[in-house]
Length: 497
Image 1 (cartoon, rainbow, N blue to C red):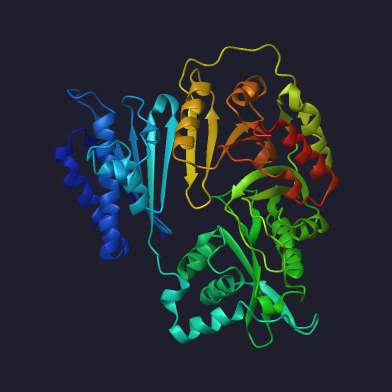
Image 2: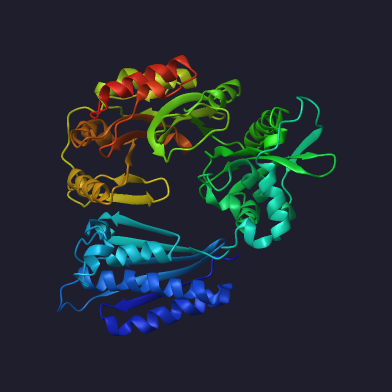
């Protein structure tokens, strides 16, 4: 689909709301949204526009702001840009149905409703360019159970508890998924995980099909000689990133142990080499060490541990009498390391970070940041994204500015008030200010998580914050020696310990 879009310049007056909502409705109708979804799009947009007009400008101020409505391959993207008072919608009070009964004007209701009506809501601080509210609504909202008959769904349901077939008893081939097989891939995901898999797009066949068209998702499947899809694995990309994630891996229960995921992994790594990717990363589960051991066989090495990454999950055949939030180990495999790899590392983490890069098999140039230089007077450029399903948030500093530590502190306070469990802070290792300011962020309660290599040497230092949540580190299973050293390093720096 072409990235068709329109741009409106809107006066800061609620009288223009009908014009705005009419534009959103017309774009949604062109794309083929159903009436219920259009109403939700209008509701979410109305709350976002009203928030900007109400909080971003003085009552008597004569100003304008912009709204971009863009057709995306998966739905409708709405971006609201303004340069008014530094309003951050995440700093309003947490919505409560109980207090709403007492105060119909309660702050926080608008943001709450946006997140109920829309699939993704994020807020970006653009520094001198002001602020940006991004709204997204999926076009294809029919899950697998909406697209197949009740009888077919019962068959898929029954597959979840089938006994494994003898090892080596099933012949299969591995190839790229065909567009018409998206439904079968979604069925396979459901029979493997139910509805617990973190990437919910896999349960929407139309999304799987569209993402593969643009290679945002590069899906490979294991297929039997009777054309049954029995396993899936993919490379996931953000935009045109040259560092995809190897994930979305699952096998129908009765076919586990046949070597499907091993052969899929071989094929995906060959695909990554053909596309000249910088490298590939993957997330290993720490409830058990099986997935990590398989990644190690393919050259993946530990580079970060995300403590309390997602909600607790049940794994068949594994004793989980005491459950806690899932932690994951980030593992990376370089394919085409950058020729120029200059990093500015906080001095108090230099030895651990050097150990991680040695383990990854690359030798970046570690430069001294020198004497501290005052921050630019411009406002920091930060991006905030939340995931209510995993109860996590990510704060990314795209550009440092005079207010950066205070900006992070305010966002952290707000996210904790919203009861998000874990907040991750992404800092560029290519920026001298990361070396100077990491200690300031750690004073806020953040602690070391690791590093994640990026495209063209744009690597990140990751810090993490646990919101009054205590992890039992003894129950985290790590397969590699370096991974265990890194986890112990993290444990000693976790203020909750």
